[in-house]
Length: 130
Ligand SMILES: [Zn+2]
Image (cartoon, rainbow, N blue to C red):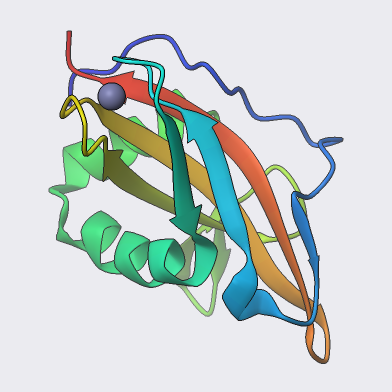
C-alpha cells in the first residue's frame, strides 16, 4: 500500500471525538487531502466495514498498516491482538472521497467503556497513493 505521511498521528492523550450513549449518531470528520472537501463518516458503519477490510488484507499489508501507525501487537488467548494507543480497540479502514476519488487510510479507536457508554478517538489518517 502506497501511503503518504500521516495528517493525523496517534496520540495516547488525544481526547475522544465521541463519548456517549447514542453511538449510532457518532460521526468522524476530516478534510479530504485531495480536494479539501469535508468528509463525514458514521462511526459504526466505518467500524463494521473496517474490520472486514483489514482482515481481507494480505499479511504484509496488515503488518504495514500496524507498523505505519506505530501500533503494537499483543497476545490474547494465543492469538495476536493489535493494540490501540488508548484503551480502545483499533479499527483501520479506507475512506474514498466522493468528489475527487482520493483514498484515506483511517485509524479509529472505539470501545464501550461502560454499559452504553461508547468512546471513539481519531488516532490516525494518511492519504493513500501518490
Ligand atoms: Zn476529495
